[in-house]
Length: 443
Image (cartoon, rainbow, N blue to C red; front, top):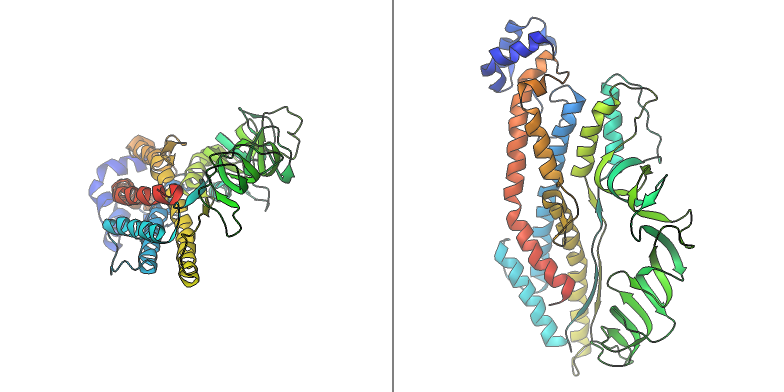
């Protein structure tokens, strides 16, 4: 911002803080001739406008705020809708959502299980995986560079970023970290740990769901007497693992080994620190490559691209495998009705777990109560915007004179909006945690 505009920022605070409109633009035009050509109605953070300030390096942060606001609102709406649907399935009569409805639904499911099943439900759970949306970061970088006067081009399918954190996917350079090499194949004799199903070559303990013969203490069996639940003895057959574990046999899924082992080939993926470009998910800050061959604006665009990527983070669906056995004497029709209800519970439960993981990651940087991203996207974005709010910081951006009137209200709306997100989702996060605890443990 030049000296004249910086002086304008100090001398007409009443105009800057006024509502955007014809009167404010007229006043600003009187102070700075020629401003009327670019002055007009200000966009809003809530509506996702991409040209509030006219400087893409700043507007990218406003866009990230809009993304977080929209994401959290959508997740809350989906959660309430899924709980209401389950309340209808399980006959919990209530016309609208409130926090108490979550407990009522859980208690109704528990009562249904107690009435129909022997030994309850065994749940084999694998949590969602959440990472920054690298596609968003690359597109945000390109758009910012175009507005900076660069000839930016993005080649479809060639999305890769610098990842300050854990790279989950292909790494073009060196990947480091304990058990950071992931071999994915239909089947593999895994020398490390297996995530998925282990087809056991001999009877062994099963940390998950045993499908086959259990020597003692199976929590659920099928009509043929085969184990389909947790086994306190040894399991012969296959073991659907609830977490990555040693597999004595054939691994159907992902095999994780140390870098440098024979199984870690060029086709393997990284699940650790990547010293070059990462083309998969990233838990941490992302820095997309320049979208043009030579661009002075490239480095200045990185921060907003990273903020937009983290604000748009994605989470994979969880795995919820449910095993159970009916009590003797439960009629076939009752069994069919129970299975139908449980199918709805599993489908909507998986959606709730996935949404809970995404909401917790956005707000707290946590999955299943464990911190995996510090600071969280919400906290990082709030810190950045507060840092930009001074006149000196604003002066570092190329804001057209006619857009000055839009900037201060946008900062106020953005910081206030982020604060409202943090407080407004607390109840949802707590309610989600109750449901997730039951859905992932069966207890």
